[in-house]
Image 1 (cartoon, one colour):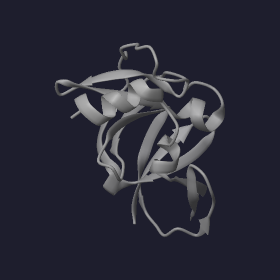
Image 2: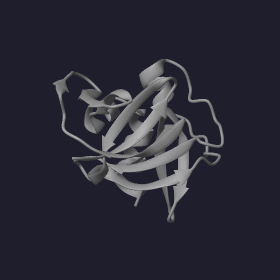
Image 3: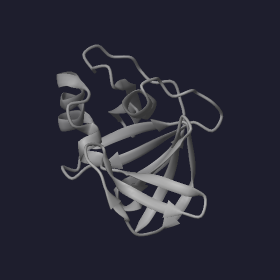
Image 4: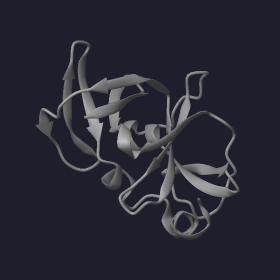
Length: 143
């Protein structure tokens, strides 16, 4: 399985590359009411609006530190909805196998020469995040 490697706080995470649409530099997001605590705002993208989840808030309990290395990773879930994920860095790709199974937003662990990488379960990660306003954006206006 090909994975995209992400950094949030001091931890390393990965997403299956098949779910990644595009990796963008971090930009200012539009604020919107009703997005919920997990959403950082809306990204204007190809004529639509994409809700962006802050992985720092969701996985580390604090917002991502915005640096030159911060990236927005556009992903599609199983329902084909487009979301953005803000990560403190995207460090590369890795071809590997899943070695352990976890629960919730963590699908398992991948062992690398540099240490363990936690594989994210995108649908669990997005479950219950964003509130009704984000679901409306994802369900109707985002492309």
